[in-house]
Length: 301
Image (cartoon, rainbow, N blue to C red; front, side, top):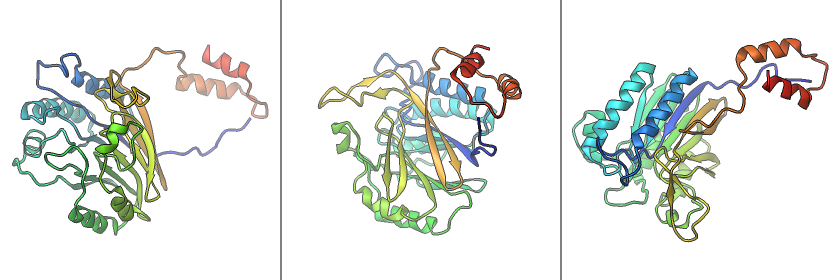
């Protein structure tokens, strides 16, 4: 029986919450859903994990109606929880968001209307946020100026690589209706990122998890923290159902791995503590084959 003696260890871990769809205090989304509760559930898991998080990325559609009250409500909660954990918070625009109230409510800045593009460094990891929104439109758009800015930034590689994040997916959705409102002309973005140090592209918007590739770079379309889209039916339509998720992105040398995490933790079947694993490893014969009986004994210990 053999195990890796030098297992892969991420250089950085980033958490992505997308499509939170926060509504004002005292209201429920569509009259039924407490969307801030799912944000709270995600924070509970982050806190309990004890992992070192390089950044918390909120990738758009943060306030359902783009209103100032919802942004202020989200910021008050997120920054209190993130501050206690020492987590940098990166806010991003989505098509439900409004640039003026977004800037005022989340950033404490003047409510201007230009795109919100920026670079954040966590040590030697670079995170680039692109504003793919176009006021009054639901589909995603990147201007020539934005792409030129991105190309200039990527011309200098980051030591630990780059995560690129935007709201609109640059890959197709299995839901036909959503394919009318993904990123317009994604090949233009693909040409910019091809051959660069971008480890992964993060998106949201679709409310379902998907994996694709653009310009040779993996693309992760995150499921929504607020609620899920039914990606398999109804035919020709769209349905939103309960079940929020968020994403853990682990960056390694030369690659990144995205892992979906439900906001609601299921019932435990078994749990292996570090002490149990250490004790079991001490008892194992290193020359013996690991059997199902061994695993069964361990999970019932």
